[in-house]
Figure 1 (cartoon, rainbow, N blue to C red):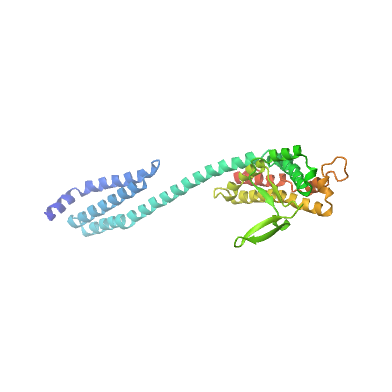
Figure 2 (figure 1 turned 90 degrees about the horizontal axis):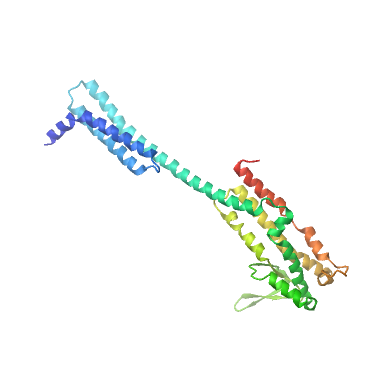
Amino acid sequence: MPQALLQWAYSYSAYSFGLALAIYFGGLSLLSMTPPDFRTSRWLVSIACMWMGAAGLIWVFKTEEALLVRCVTGLGFGVIVFCLWPGTIRYITHRQDVASKSSVNVTMTIAQIQELQRVTELLGGKDEYALEQTFDFHGYVKFGLLRAKQVVDPDKVSKAQSDEMEQYFQNWIAAVMNPSLTRITQVNEGVPRVEPQPGVPFIFRLPRAYSLAKAQLLPFETSPEMPKDIQEAIKDFDRTLDENAHLLITVVHEKLTQDKNNIILEDDPNSPYLGVTLTAYWKRFSPLKPKADAVLAAIRKFYGVR
C-alpha cells in the first residue's frame, strides 16, 4: 500500500507542483485584501511549500533521471522548504507589522487632528482681550476685589452688590487660595482645619467660564495623541492661567498690608484709592496672547505650515 501511494504521488508530482505553486501565490494574494488576511495567507503558503517539498522529495527518489538531475532538483526543493518557506513567512509577518502600525498611525492622526482643531477653536483668532474674556478674567477681578472688600469690611458692600456677586459666582466649580494667609490647626486625629484670619482674604472663587474653558486644556496636556511640542506649549499656557488666577490673592494681600483703604475704597470714584489694587493687578498680569500664539505656532509646525 505505501509503495502504491508513493507511485501515485510520483505519477502526479508534476501536476502537484503546479497546484502547490497556485496555492502559494494564492496565499500571497490575500495580502492585498482589505483588510489583509495574514493568518490564512500563512497557512496557504505553508501548505504550498510543504506540498512542493514533499512532491519534490518523492520525485527525486522515484525518478530514473541521472544523479546530477536528481541532485540539482533536490537542491531546488530544499531551497523551497528551508529558504522560500521561512522567508515568505517573515515577509508576511513584516507586512502585518507595517499594516498594524499604519492602522495605529491613521487612528492617531485622526485623533490628533480632532484635538488640534479643538485647541485652535479655543485659542485661535483671538486678541489679548478676547482671550481674557474667554477665561473671564475681567469678571473674576471685578468680583474678586468686591469679595476682598466684603472680607475686610462687610459693611462697605451693599446687599445689591453682594447679590450681584453671588449671582456671578453661581455654579462656580473651583477656587484659588493661599493657605499661608490662614491658621491651620490639627483636629480629629491629625486632620487639618483651616481657620481664616479675620479681615484677610485668602480664597477666591473662580468664574464658571474660567473653569470650563480651562478644563478643555486638560485632555490636551495628558493625551498620548498630542505631539509633545504642542503639549508643552499648552502646559505653559495653562500655567500662565494658574499664575494669573493666584496673582489676585497676592496683589490683594500686598495692597491690604500697605493700607486697607486700597481694598475698601478700591471702587470709590471720589477716593484717591480708586483703582489702585486693580491697576497693580493688571500691571503684573501675564499676557495670554503670546502663550496662545506659541500653542498655535506649535500646531502649525506639526502640520508643516509656516
